[in-house]
Length: 68
Image (tube, rainbow, N blue to C red):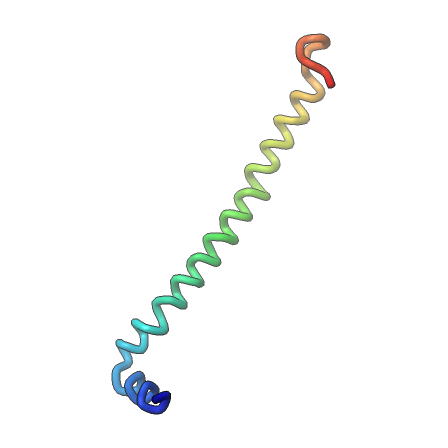
């Protein structure tokens, strides 16, 4: 069974690429997009949130908001 499957893949390289290559390329693309999203989160969104939080912490009006 395995030998006939390997022979089929050897004789039909486009079928091999369709069965084995496309899912691997999709997994690589998903991994790259995950890394890109994590980098955007860490290097863009998180610093902006920290700057906004620090600005609100240091420059709020006294008695203008609720305190814990």
